[in-house]
Length: 333
Image (tube, helix red, strand yellow):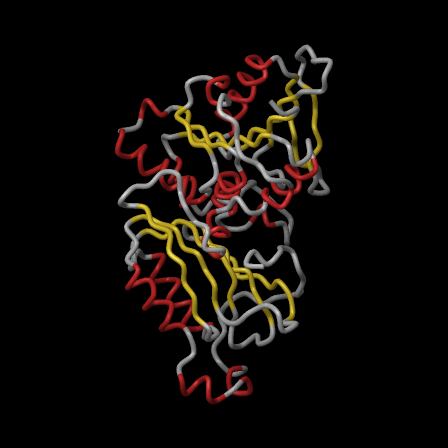
């Protein structure tokens, strides 16, 4: 078993209790990773006998940067366990709460839906996902939860937790640093590699492709319809998109529950592809209705013919972009 076992999840009491049980069961030192004022994570050892081989369990605080921490703390060999409270897993992915009670302007932890975003990130980065308090949830609901998690992270081992040793018994598959960023179901769907380990008739992942840019005003209306459930319950979607009013810029599309982020990745260098590539996961989704809503938000033939000079005057209610940068790799490379 690798030197570091990282424990994630937005339900802090359940996560910490599981981390403590894991440390006891495996004879490891327990460390707490908590966010500093500068946004990075630092670790504090708990008062527990230390091992002499450097093996540790790290409880990742609710608001730490999970991607940065998993890549920097313990290296790419770390086991990453996402602890899910079965009593409210789907609620965690749908709520619009911020991640912290108060945050400075520009701190994404204060965004609407930031807690749901963190819940989705933990699921997508995990090597294994374990459910606690599952005895209190009906079997059919558990089946939906486990299938949804498997769609969000097809490579993860999923388990109803019995005890940490049994949860960790089977080896997780890891292929190096790049694999940490490629576990997410949306990345695998865009790479045509989406093959969930568990399935349920209510859970679907769909891929949406459209070469035409979106009309921002109509896209906002489409997003409102999706949030109302017009095509089923859209839980998570992510990918890449383009807006007609902001030509030459590829944007990252990210949605969890009722929260939506469309953020610039970088200016077009001729290699970023065209239009929209988005993976969408949810419950009882209608592919036909979902496709029609998004297609109606794309530019029409007449609008395409009018060209960028006309597009600049279209209604654009989406948040302004202050900086165009590059924060994520193109998952379709």
